[in-house]
Image (tube, helix red, strand yellow):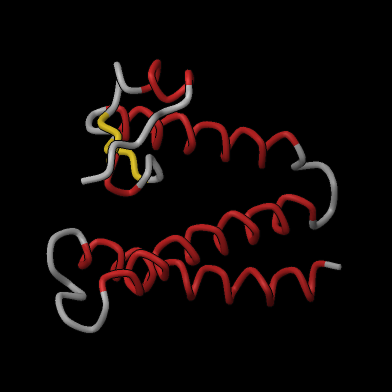
Length: 116
């Protein structure tokens, strides 16, 4: 295994999360910090959308962008698994999330078209 030297930020981050040195520091295992991150993301997204509630169509557009981001993340997670073992581990959760988000994004497109 090659010895990968981390940046100064990487050394600080290594105290809180596991850094995969075989992937040259590009993969992080957040562990319980993942739940904290997702909780903060949900609060940020809903508050950011509510701030623009008075501007016609803007909150729906912002929700559409967020939904597309979630769909992209789930799609990439499933693609990286390959055809074998697609639904192993948490793959089923990504597939379920994608199946929920696709109709949501599609209805937002219709809503945006008729709202403007």
